[in-house]
Length: 292
Image (tube, rainbow, N blue to C red):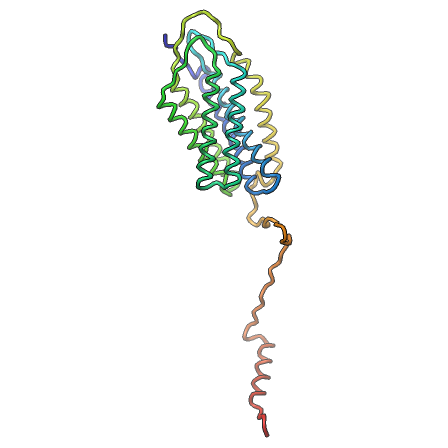
C-alpha cells in the first residue's frame, strides 16, 4: 500500500532551521571562494578547500535537519550510517571540484558553467544518496520529471552563487548570494521530496539503522562545529569581512620591485621664467651680426 508522507511533522521549524544552515554554509563557502580569487601561491588551495567544506557541510546539515520532520505513516524511518556520512563526503568532494575550477579558471564563461554544473550535481547527489540511506518497511520510487527539475534547480543555484563569489563587491554581496543559494538549495530539497512516493509493505519486520534523533548529535557536533570554526576564520580576516580595498597594491611578481614609482614627466609651461629667459637670449643672439 502507498504510505502517507509528511515532510513537516514539526511545522515550519525544521524548514526554517534547515534554510538558515544552508545560508550559513553558503555564506562562509562563498566568502572563502571570493578570498581565494585575491591570493596566489599556497594560500589559494587552502581557501578553496575551506569553502568547499563549508558549503558541503552546510547543505548536508540542512538536508538532515529537514529530514527530522520527515515521517511516513505505518512505518518507522531509519538511516544507514555509512550511506549517510558517504553523502557528506560526496557533497564536499564534488562541490570542491566545482569551486577549484572557478578558483583557478575564473568565474566566467566555460569555467563558470563547468564549475556550477559539477557543484550542482554534487548538491543533488548528496540529497539522493542521503535518501538512498533511508531504511524503512517499504519501497521508494521517484517521479523522473520532478527529480530532473530538482537537479536543474541545484545546478542553476550553484552557478549563480559561484558567479556572485567572483564579483568584487564586498561582504554584503556575498551575503545576498548566500541567501539566494540557501533558498535554492532548500527548494531543491523539497522539490526532490515532492518527487518521492513510498509503497509500504505492511510487515512487522523492524527496519535496521539509526533513528533521525540518533543522527542529530553527530550532525551538531561535527559539521556545525566545523562551520563555527570557519566562521571564526572569516571574522578574523579583514579582507573577508570588509572586502578588498579599492586602492590595494598590485601583486608582487618575480623581477619587479615591490614599490615601483613611475617617474613623472615635468612639462614646463611656456610662461615659465626660465623658459622666457632662454628665449630672450636666443632672440638677441639671432639679431647680432655674425660678420662685421
